[in-house]
Image 1 (cartoon, rainbow, N blue to C red):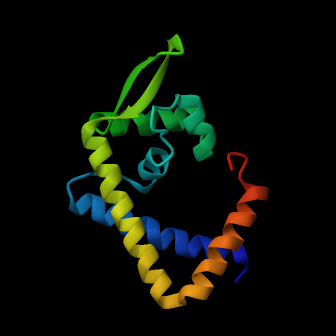
Image 2 (cartoon, one colour; image 1 turned 45 degrees about the horizontal axis):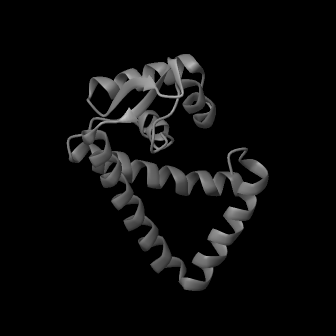
Length: 139
């Protein structure tokens, strides 16, 4: 298998664990909604920025945000820097969901670290961080 596919397989395994746990906790989110939500900045994000970071169209991002909004996980508020613009930010329920998702991520990473051992875990993190420098425009 090529490197990208190997990384994708692990990513999807993590993704599935997070979404399954979120659903069991009463948050009816899809993988696409979760991927978009994880890109919301602490102070909120504009829809165009979320779409760009999630690598989806603005229309797709709008649909995903609307679904998260219907569940009470996010809200749209005026951007203090530009009254005409809107920010998408987490509600209290959304912050709780985000914290639950992070607990799952930490748990899965711990499982992986136990499987790989400390040396390989550090090497993997270093290698992927270095690779991100050339593949992620937001790094």
